Structures are given as structure tokens and as C-alpha cells.
Image 1 (cartoon, rainbow, N blue to C red):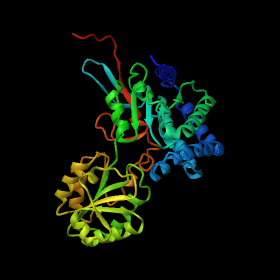
Image 2 (image 1 turned 90 degrees about the horizontal axis):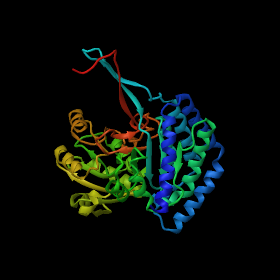
Image 3 (image 1 turned 135 degrees about the vertical axis):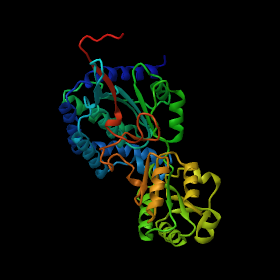
Image 4 (image 1 turned 90 degrees about the vertical axis):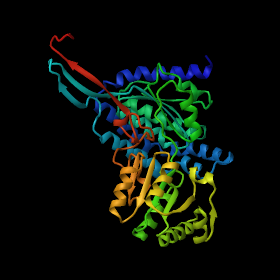
Length: 418
């Protein structure tokens, strides 16, 4: 066993011991740790910003893209958002011990399906330091211990945030090991975590396609994927054009470096007016447009799209646009290129909208709203640990309930099986 593997195992062992205590800890105690985390975030801004400045400086030296630097950056607003998220998670109902359903068998056995923690959750993520607090706070609320492995580009920020939350847990009387983070960046740590099935109960990878593939291919621990975004919007033959402009602008421009930002736009060929209005707005906002041949003819300064563009998650101010002749064609293209995360339709045709919502097979589907709402906080779930594109256990924004499992509690009075 290498030194890296030994170090990962030691931390996971601490988490496993903590998880056994957390599973039966009072909800009030876990909430106290979350509220204390919010206090420490606000009172430790200077320390957090100094740690983040080291990461930002190194990121610029290593040529990180503007989108990556945006994900990496902490500021007063983002620190406050983390604090508020902790408070929102604390205010959520305690899921542990919730009776999901119960029934009595003809032989008198009373069976109750009860919500319980998963145990130890390993989070492997890139770039965004806020994931450290979001992931740990949700795991804690759900009674899980967590082992965090952030990207090397955010190592200083992540350690500072994880240490802060560990301090809050100690202040609330929770065990050491409730929140642990790998303090080294060797790549060997990822497969080491993914193979610790005796210690870690679930792995949640958050990052690019390469990271997720590396985890899933090497894992013996169950993996719940937060896959790439590649979000898509279809503008129907008729719609409120100013609304369409506003929605697409928000979905592309407000924060282009996130998974719920739109990457492919399909516009009905009968709605050229909408196409031109949207394109004019996006070009004015500095978005690079790449289009099908017809789009390039209709829109000035639109570059020809390649076959690869339709399957590219840009995470930047770039958008692919294609004209279609029907909602059927749009939905076929969406299915072909979708990652299963988020798709939207903009239309005033209720029949088409309801068909789109019913037939498009993605975790989140929208009618006349920005795809940027695909987020645990925006859904009212508190923070999120990720947005699952899987179809097993959890799908879409993963909050507290999605970080629990259940067990069956059976009560009898002497029954035996014949």
C-alpha cells in the first residue's frame, strides 16, 4: 500500500467511526453545527479570501480559463451565499427517522420503512470551493460523515473551508471525522477513494467528463454521477419573443461556466424573428455564435458549427444554434445530444409544452423559464451536493433527502415463517 493510499484509508476510517455516531445524533446538534458554520464563515472572511487569493494567483499563472477562474473565485457575496445556504439547510426538516411508509401484514407483522443516513459519502470535485461547504453541510444534515477531495487548483480555499466546518462540528459536540478533507493533491488519491468500499458507502464525483470517467471506471464503491451539463433550449414556432430573448440571455450569459448554462439552442424555422432577436442580444453580450448553414445565412457574425460543437459543453460565452422544422425534430436532436441534465422549451403552445415536458427524458425540464434554475437552492432544497444525471437512487438536484437511504423495521409478537 502506498503512502497516499494509507493516508486516504486513515481519513476514511475516521469518517467511518464518526458516521456511526452521527447516525443517531440529535437533529438539533447537527443544526447547531450548521449554524455555527454560518457564523464562522462570516467572521473568517479575511482568512478565506487570503487562502483563495493564493489559488487565484496560481490559477492565473497556470493559464486557467476565465470560466475556470470564475468558478474558483471567492468574494464577500459568495461567502455570504455559503453562510445563508448553511442556515437554509439547518432549517430543513430532519430526514433521519422519517417514516416513509408503513403497513401490517396478514400475520400481524408491522413493517415500517424508515429513512436513515447512507454512512460515509466521498465527494470528488473540481474548481468551485463552495462545493466544500455545500457538500459537507448536506452530508451533515443527513447524518453522514464526508470525505472531501477537491481539485488541486483550489487546495488552499478548500482546506480553509473544511477546517472551518470541522471546527463548527467540534463546537457542537460532534465527533472528529465528521468532515475530513485530503490535504494533498496526488492523482493517486482519486482511485484510492473510489476503491475503499469497506469505508466509503457512496462516491459523488463533480467535475468534467474526464474526472467522472476516471472515478466510475476505477470504483468499487457505488458512484452517483454528476455528469456534464450540455443543457439545451428549444424555441417553438410561436412564443413571446421578448420573453425568449430574456430567458436565453439569462441561460447563456448570467454565468456561462456552470452546468445549467445553455449550450445548444434549437429554433423553429417558422420563428426567424425570434432567432434574429435572440442572436442580436447575445452578440451584443459578447457571445460567440456557431450555427447551422441556414442560421449562418440569417445571422451576421455567426460562425459555422462543426459536428463536434453539438456535443460540446463550452462552459463559456459560446452557443450553438440550429434551425429545425418541427418540435419532433427538436426533441430528436435534444435526445441525441443530451447528457440528461436539463432542457427547456419556450412556447405559447400549451399542447407542445406539455408534450415536451412529458417526453423529454432529462432530470429537469422547463417551460418558459431559464435553465439556470436547475439548482438545489433555487428549487428550495437548500444547497446541493450535485445534480445527478443517473436514474438510480437520485436524479436531478441532490439535497438532504437524496443523501439518505432507508431500512425496514419489522415488529412482531412471536411470528415464525411456515
